[in-house]
Image (tube, rainbow, N blue to C red):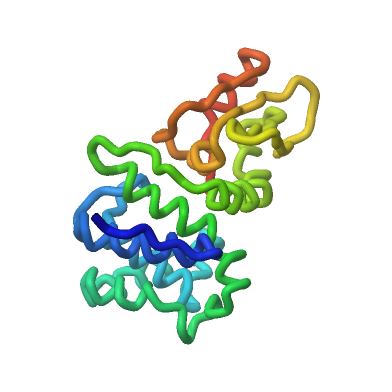
Length: 214
């Protein structure tokens, strides 16, 4: 049995876990990122951290540049790409504090994108500290991700007495669950477990039907 190795930086741990899983399932395995395979997802992560053409991720008219950069990265093959992704040397995120801010949610969600696209997946048993890191990131990133629903939204942790308002307003939808599962929902993934929705029926339906995420 593999020994579970953890650090005090979830971005570091998720980078390692994602890389290990990518090699385990192989380049053509599916992900939750639309039609992307594992190879395409790893190429996206490399371009995002290492290429000036990553601007197309945020600026739609330039997305062709990003896609071309991804295709070039893929030519190296999955093993070579994973080897590069494992290290943050000579990137903008080599400082742990920067890596934590820039990558905690990105790497957590994309690790889960690989995990949850595989048959018979089950939620991971994250430590309280890891759930706390995800919760901290979600409170920041989640505000913009649920706006397409057009309804007030509050998230509540199922494991602790803690909540956060993503969109203020009267009669909000309150979604209760573990931070890891709340994150997958807010990032627009259908593969989540054990979430409880409370609030006006129409608002709950609007939130569930909305195109959430990036």
